[in-house]
Length: 533
Image (cartoon, rainbow, N blue to C red; front, side):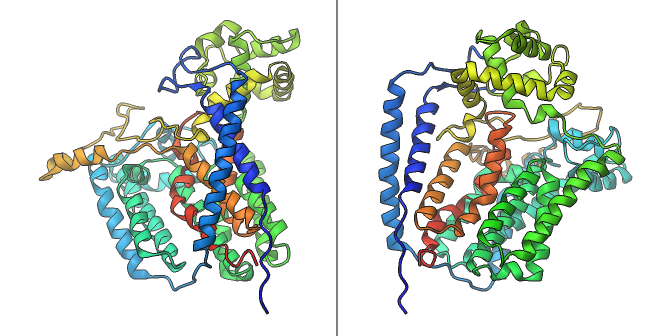
């Protein structure tokens, strides 16, 4: 019996075009002086004018036309994905190539990269400071394994090296597994070569492989979840009933939840989508996911309380409201007496003008002399109530403040080095005998390799990567490939959680999955041939 092709939808292209119009119209209003730590007099947002609507309309129409062209192009090359056996030889080749290409960076910054946030994990892992969940208990325990081995041999440097080496090998294996997985879906070898070069050449991947941050390992969990979702969709839901699949799924969910504080919300979002898409077929997975969510809440709640583990502070979740109220305060926005009192209880009005930096909230929340964190912790409801009512009176100001705090994640082409390329060890911190040894300079030809390595430090645009995900999602929904669109869920929920609580306008590590999963994105609309039937 001949399959009937369903009529394509138009609304996904319209919504995507409107999103692009808004991103371009708002993005051009921002004047960024190149440093997120600069004050509100340097990083600014222009006043709204009627010509912004013209820019919005032109950008939306142009994007709509582009989407129609891409849609027609994908119609020509559409085909179902293959399901070939895993190529172990290809996996080993990719793994070795990545390890070799990243080696100059590792040798230049031996024994690894340890920066400000890393030292919190070091202190807690060695028992110097009380353990807390802001830097994730389970990640700290993971770091502690290597540090304590080093300490047992009398060398914290050894501990850092063991951690860096382990993460180096793990991340190379993860990307090699991803490339071999793409091969199993029938991807052409020329595309795999380009994808391998994508991971091997830019030094961003080498840096993330050896830095003591939770983000690379967290991203690895999300990448495997993305691949598993595709496999399950490709099997038409059959894999959701496989016991081995469920075990792997649960382990990945646990890693996602306990290696980043927003991981729980990503898992909840995926659970809700699966509930709608695969109510019966995914019964095992849904039950297992719900159990993981409940267990995580119990562990982070009553269990952590019983162990007297400090939870994440409220201030980490309300960075955007703080920035919006600060914007109104420094620009003399409208507030009644109650709202003004709430804003000034957090910080005196004159201090806002001293510390407010539109692109990063740290200058407010780390101002221990004037910022009243205890008031925020104990009167969170009152603060948020006044934030909401201030926003009604100062909506344009809130839009400007929000855009300045988040634009690095949605403005197309926006790039900055903040949190992008971190190298070496910050020395003389907390009295640890930790320092960087440039082994690369001691090797024949090391100076040449170091210059090459420096030339390959690219700053990727998270906003551009997000835009490509939006294009992909629009093309999938146009073809009614709703279940295939589930593959984008981990990255989509990662981005959404960041937009709700962005601590800084730029930092690739917060949305690292958008970069790591990039080779998959152009392929998904091509694999929708069966989904349209």
